[in-house]
Amino acid sequence: MLGYIATQWLTVAARYRFETKRNQLELDALHKKIEILNRQAQAAPESAWNGYRKFTVSKKVEECADTYSFYLTPHNGRPLPPFKPGQYLTFELHPPNAGKPLVRCYSLSDGALSDGHYRVTIKRALPPTNEPGIPPGIVSSYFSDHVKEGDILNVKAPSGRFYLDIETDRPVVLISGGIGITPMLAIARQLTHIKDKREIYFFFGCRNSADHMFRDEVIALQKSNPNMRLHICYSRPLDKDVLGETYHHEGRVTNDLMKEILPSSNYEYYLCGPGPFMDTLVNGLYEWGVPKKDVKFEAFGPATVKSGPQEPKPQSETANQATIPIEFARSGKTVLWDSSMENLLEFAEKNGITTIEGGCRAGSCGSCLVAIKQGNVEYVLEPGAAPEEGTCLSCICRPAGKMVIDA
Ligand SMILES: Cc1cc2nc3c(=O)[nH]c(=O)nc-3n(C[C@H](O)[C@H](O)[C@H](O)COP(=O)(O)OP(=O)(O)OC[C@H]3O[C@@H](n4cnc5c(N)ncnc54)[C@H](O)[C@@H]3O)c2cc1C
Image (cartoon, rainbow, N blue to C red; front, side, top):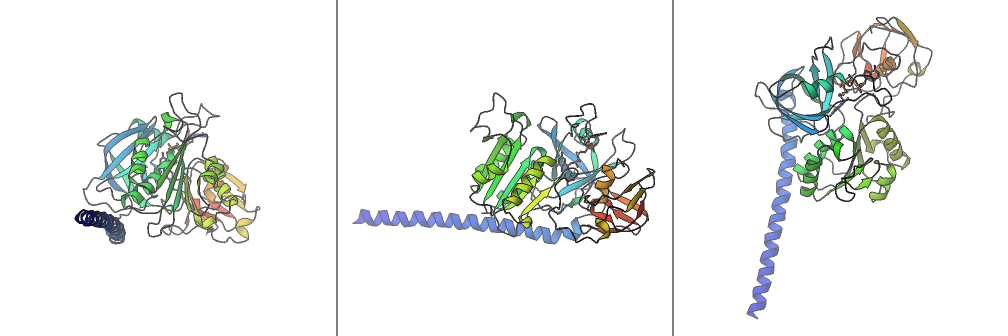
């Protein structure tokens, strides 16, 4: 009898210890979530900054061939505002042979609670495979070859509309190819850090282990997050890559793979990767019946998938006409507007105009600002900050009629 009571008592004590621990873990997770929300709420106006702020490169780490992470600490030592996972920083660089300052955006690749530093990860943009004679990307090469620890860089505050809303509890599918992993890593790190309970499916595709950036970091995240399921796809595995050990699927990340793995299509999807990768996957998700509002994506270059994460504003008849002449005054070129174009920047690039800079392509960074000499525009998306009179953010607007632009 005494033995029975002792066993019962031990069972109750063990259950009590287990439940106390579980409650404590849940409480910790809640505290972390509240901490993030508080920091976001308090930090907004005071510690975010306008224009460029000086940051010191405190650490440079090679992640894989041609890809480096840069840890950035504020030069004035003052606190940093948190950011929403998925957002990016805007840099102004002065590569010696560029002839002018160049503006580029890089997604934050760390969690939002990494005290005292930001991290971005930059891959050298190689020339298109069918044009190997063309030089690689200017800024990404400058970062790879010249930017070193101790250098000081000009950086704009975190921004962007592509981010995870931590206040909701929708399960997520994170899909990335190559360097498109950076915003997904920030999202996965944050969800893991706050011990969020939602299901996470993390699909990542690259050629093989030589291109596989953040391998150890992502595996460590998966080990500490019981809700995260990782699916690594290698399209051209090396002899030393072992299916089932170093990667999970041979081939690219495809819609068929998602249909095979996911229990249903009822998730929030976040995608980032090369143009054709996004084209196929985003359209495949729509065809699978996933509502547009649940598919969020970020293009690192000119967008190829039409109608981005924010529903475009309805356009007037004029912007859809193909008979509007657009004059690029400085380039001495007049071209008829093409109504299949998403915006003026895309139209300018398609017509060989090189005097407009593409930055974030979301109306936030201001690098595509161009003066209007005649005419007006209609915004497809709401500008991050209203542009000065007589100018437009060419990456998010379309012509409202005949125009003359200073480009
Ligand atoms: C929101 C956002 C977030 C981003 N986050 C990241 C990130 O986390 N990591 C990252 O690495 N990148 C990221 N990018 C991409 C990054 O901003 C740059 O676009 C990228 O580094 C290329 O810039 P670059 O100056 O090196 O290349 P550019 O000099 O602009 O060249 C771009 C490409 O064009 C090719 N090219 C050059 N000349 C020609 C020519 N005459 N004809 C045809 N092709 C030519 C180059 O070889 C190169 O492949 C992000 C972009 C955006 C918009």
